[in-house]
Length: 176
Ligand SMILES: [Cu+2]
Image (tube, rainbow, N blue to C red):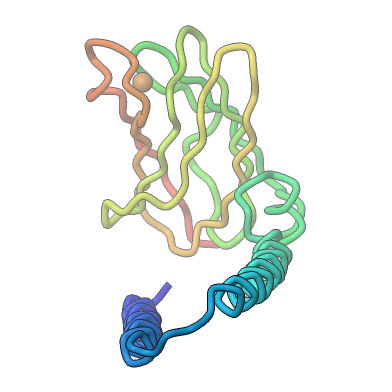
């Protein structure tokens, strides 16, 4: 998300929070019977709970398709025409192919030979763009569309022993 939008949202929330407390402070000198407070408290709690639940449900439904699970990624991006088998091992990555096309969904079928690793995908500028656990005896499927050609790097993101930091490889994303 755009950091300016995040900042604006945080400032708006801060203003609402401050306005709320200012109202509380302005009203506090007045004596109010305890029953009134209890009643309004129950009302506020009910309103807050229902609105939070409603917001959470809407956000959940809206973001469901953007979850990194294979099924939801395929719903969003379409079925992947290219699959790369990836095996993590102490301390290297074995990829079934080292050249993939840009702009189409690529499925990485990721597993491990010995211990848990984590398949971290870095773009040519060194930014982490996707990651998935590499587990022995289990295949995790990561679907990703490479937006630009270049040399991408794989790094292990799960500490897996002495040479963990050297567990890297690269592959090429080719222009279509
Ligand atoms: Cu590792």
